[in-house]
Image 1 (cartoon, helix red, strand yellow):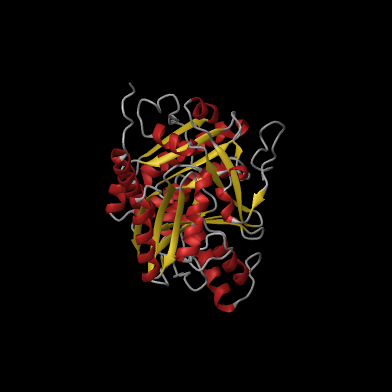
Image 2 (cartoon, rainbow, N blue to C red):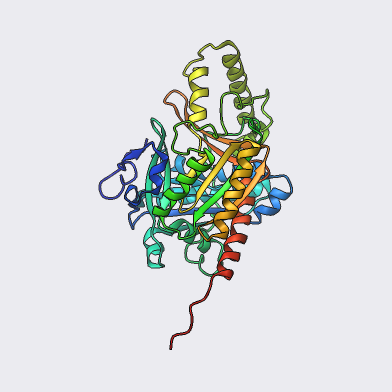
Length: 406
């Protein structure tokens, strides 16, 4: 882990952690990201077209590569990041901004050359987001010992996304490509699990926000989900979690191994990465079948950790969930959301499929440092975001205007 220096460098590393997800509704759980930190942002251009063409797994892999590259460039320091399905963001302190920005640029080139996907990439200082009217506050949610997810409030994440997609506003922050760019630092990125089936019938990708936009009003939504629908997001292992030992599917060789080799092995040697992944997958299958420990790999321990270390619930001013629900729960949720939208209490976007996709970041099995990114199949978050934006626009146009002053 990278050594932090004095000043603001150790801000995130020193944040207190909490394991009760319900605390994302408490404003005091969040601390302001220091002004001299930089938010690195990336988004796949025309991701909806890529999803429609069946490239949703590739889209997820590129978004996960953004997080992987930044963390590797930062010496695998504990840093705040968010995976969005078709994009990602990560915040870095001043001493790591240059190296992390270069790594992000390399991911952009890699995505274009290996998958034909174009990435928008930018580096926006936290102080500039504040100057433009937003804040960027961070909380630290503990998945398991040593594995944390950042939660964000204050509107900074949404503003950064808006700036990134505006050609004029992003100009001062856009990252230029270097002709001398080497391979992207993607050690640890893997794509070996098969799709996770919805064991209860429906895999629901949900984007949900109180209409007020206030963090404190999120508690009412969390309460309703728990009391009315039985979806308890504060539980350490809720019944609606999409990843369970029984839902984990692995085939040999993994269907995603070629994609992993193309991306991780870009400018490093695709076949070398493929062979390494092939042998690791073979050892994995042997360990799981026999139950035997192979070096640092303890099959039962690792599989349990996989189910814990997922980002199926997260918050960045907006609640983002991937839930395994039965038909009755899905219908009840849809009815609740429609009612809340009609009452002006909430805004949402939803996509329903029959499985989820998992992309992995495994830094150390021995130290149990691994996190797994979840998205609904068929472009779950990308399609839910389209639904969300359409509903938000409709709600905004329907809002009554103030009468003229006299």
